[in-house]
Amino acid sequence: MDVTIYEVAQRAGVSIATVSRALRGTGPVASKTREKVMKAVEELNFMPSRLGVSLAEGRHAANGIVFPNLAGPYYTEVLLGYEEVASELGRSVVILSTKGRSNVNDLIKDLAGRVDGMLIFGHTAPDPLVTELVQVGMRLVFVSREPLAGADTLRSENTESAVRLARHLLGHGYERFAFLGAPMVGGDDVDERWQGVRSVLGSAIEAVTTAQYTVECGYDAALKLLKSPKGTASHAGARPAKTARPQVLVCSDDEVALGALLAAEELGLAVPGDLAVTGWDDIMAARHARPALTTIRQPMRELGARAARALDELITGVRDTPEHLVLSTELVIRASCGTHPQEESP
Image: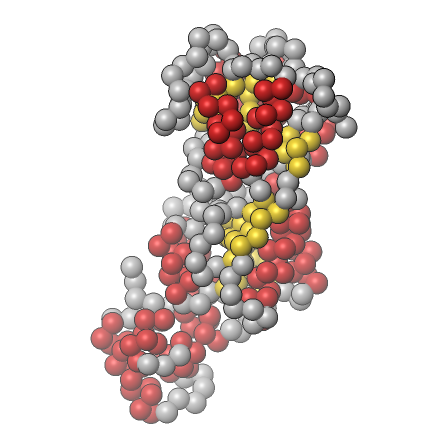
């Protein structure tokens, strides 16, 4: 990993702000102190970056957001919540989408040099880069990621909600299930949802890769799965292929579920008569789909709003101790999972 301004400051025995002033000549630095800084720079072969010196100066009035993808209602809702609060706080928002980019590290470092703090989704930033950002004192808030040292994390509850959903589906009498989700990354939201349903359903559910969390990928994965009389397990550790089509598609999010509904319609399968489908998020389209989609409602806009306030607290020094917050979610039962004797659809 490249040498950071934090390491130079440690070697010279000064603050990173002093290193920044010595390198830029932007403030008073004693000659002996400057000599110590320049000696540390030479010994460590440090290449000054806009990231390190900008962090030391703290001269911005902007926040950065790093998205894996700007498409889809989930990101839109989170961004709306974030931007609303950031505007109230007098901060502008600079957005970076890493989809299709090969130089993610450089792009994120460049953004970090132009903002006072960043909101990063999940594992969009590689772990070594996250470590570097923490070391140089970047104010960070992560959404939809497991807790990590040196940064705030904020996410919606996943596991217990997935357990409630799975138990509800068992109450219908279903026996064969498939989970449609992109490759799960340990500790991310979708992996927690998978772990939750699997803890209840065990070998009765298989995991099926959707590549991305989109309507198109949900459609493709469901069409391929449902065309065959045998389910196709495509996730490491999943159970062997089934001998019959799944009765329920538990989808990683509502967009994937909407794609599954389209695939079922194309194949002439009635939902929920021939196939039950569930989603996650409760986007607007979930309520207006036909049949309306059973899903888990998570507070997407609140996620964004809370992330903006948390980042502002770190930037302004209201607190310097990271917090890890989990927001509650709600099982919303609608027609797509079938009628249930104990519960009524809202």
